[in-house]
Image 1 (tube, one colour):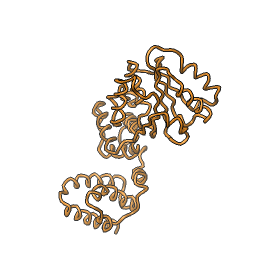
Image 2: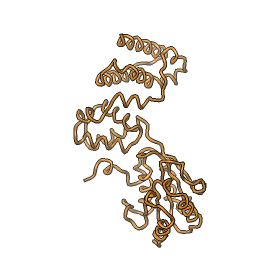
Image 3: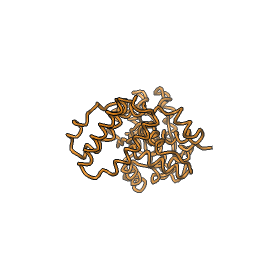
Image 4: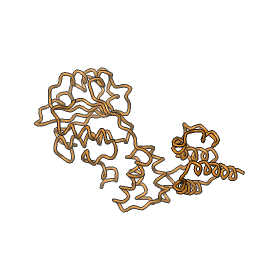
Length: 307
């Protein structure tokens, strides 16, 4: 029985959500294999799709819908390679003859000891085999510069708040699951751009129901505070000195920041309802003057609640 993260993990490059430019590049590599670079460093936070990207590439290169277990695909956990002796044993496995192209993956390559990375560098420099090497990591620090310099490097981004919401909507529709917009907002804030974590939250809701999930797995004020923890408090008089486009982009954050710092004004439920109402109201703001008036009305409203 698969969980939702396993069920909806992309098998092919065309099915990968986001990362458009990186996906297009590797689609080109599949078409022009002999001309392509053989070594790749892929960086990115957990849950952003590094392993999924490589497996989807391997599936298309090898011609299968599940490269795991295929003799032309080798995925190694760098944390289990402790010494040159370990690596020497693996070297025979890496270079055993197989017909066709192969994909060899070192996951969390920054965990490899430096002396092992030195051996790895020599191996990829001298290799004339039909092998693509992928070095995956959540951290750039710890990977030998010489390995990076001999590879093409890609940095996969985490997903925006709206991208997470859109992806959740897609899964919810396919699974015929209904949750409130407020709950989706909570999930998107909680996972902070990590798509895999977002899908795992749906598994929780699928089992326990939305009410139980919100009550037991969501610290709403903590989510808002964490999301905007690097923002300093600003008053509206200072805020409106910014150009209007910047002001529009920062308005949501401003409101949330104000409400977080005065969280005693709202219960969690009222807070979500207020913010949802604000998003609906914002759609009716058509001119700059409307926009500034709305900010001052909001400021008066917050002052009233404080009193």
